[in-house]
Image (cartoon, rainbow, N blue to C red):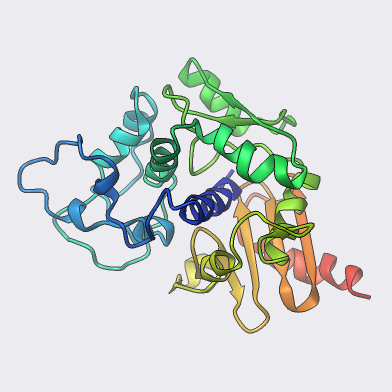
Length: 282
């Protein structure tokens, strides 16, 4: 589920390390010079990668347009069609699962690779995570079954018709592999002496950017990672159905959970801190 978002943040950092992306302040449209901006639409021209990473990008919808985007042939272009709006860039937090698909579209474009292949080569395989394959749902019913089924899945990444991995959900990881990614973050992007992603990016990615209010358990948000406690450098990737990668740097601790245990999202951090963390640090 939404733990996928946090993995995309790591891939963006790797792309920046490789100079495929200049910086987070680069305008989104600079990657799509062929995109035709609608007449009178000015806001979209000022949206940057950082706006997408921090969920402060503006969209022209109140509720995410699942049918329109997920039934289109190119989710990236469809998401671009909803980016912007008359209100301009307000800096307000607007959590998005579909809009950030633009990020995986950018990674695919600058690398010349399918998102899953880029992830396999530069993130997964170097740290011992099993390589993944794309998974495309031919029908809406198949798509629905993928998202609601609690049956364990193989090493796949849900993708759009272009073969671009969904940025907001759909990456299937085992708890062991999720823990490896958490350990990579805890070790500041280093794996057995090899720098997979720069320590600078890990620090920037997990630094609180915006406070999200009571609806989001009063947590802050970094670059597609939830910031739980800045003082202890505690942060987490959180997905619906109980998926979590929890990292507490001050306690040198990583906890990965990939099981369904509660219907809500944010109380699982309380669950980890109350019941799991004390056992591990005794």
